[in-house]
Image (cartoon, rainbow, N blue to C red; front, side, top):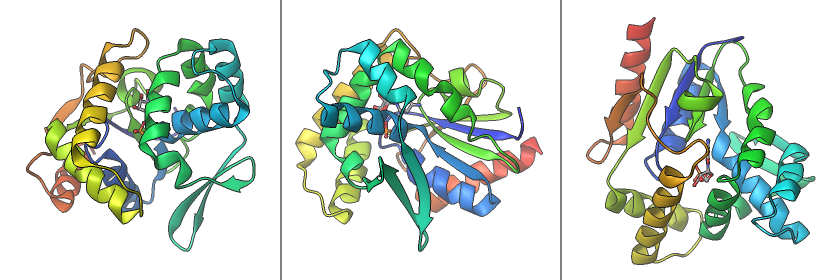
Length: 222
Ligand code: C5P
C-alpha cells in the first residue's frame, strides 16, 4: 500500500479514539476513525427511515455516504450531507445502531475502499475493530487495545459528560457488554486480535503511558 499503517483495534471505550488521535498528531500521520463511518451509516439510515436490517438499502446508503471530515480550530468536525453531525453520531443510541449495521457484510464491503483511501503518505493511524484483520491486513504494526468492561464504562461516562451528554453508569456498562457480545460474535469481521497483533491492556494505564508504549513499539519497528 501507499504508506505505513498503524492499526489499532479493540472493543469500544478502550481509549482507541483518544490514543489514535494523539499518536497521529505526534507523527503527523492521517487518522481514520472507522467507527464513525458505521455511525454515519446508521444516522443516515435513521434519518431516511430505512430499517436497520434492510441490508441492500443500508449498503446503498454506506456506498453513497456524503461525508466531509475536516478540522476547525483544532477540532475534528464531521459533516453528513452538509450538516455538522460531530456530536449527533456519538450518542449511545447511534453507537448501538452502528453495531447493528456493522454486522451486515454488504455494508462492510461498501465501506472497504473508502477506508483504504485514507492510507496516504506519510502514514495512517487506523482505529477500529477490523483494521489489522481485514482492512489493513499488511499493516506493519497492529495493536489490540483492551480494558475491563467496568473501566471502559467509567471512561465513556466521563467522555459523555464532557460532551454535555447524560447517561447512567450501570446502563453504559450494560450497553458496552451488549455491544462487545455483538461485535465479537458476528459472523462477518468479528472483533478478534490479528494473529500478529500486540495486545495491550490499558485498564491501569494513563493515556500518556499508552501513547508512550505505542510510540516505543513504532520506533522498534523502524
Ligand atoms: O468505535 P465506535 O464505537 O465508534 O464504533 C461503533 C460501532 O461500529 C462498533 O460497535 C462496531 O460494531 C462498529 N465498527 C466495526 N468495525 C470498525 C469500527 C466500528 O464494526 N472498524
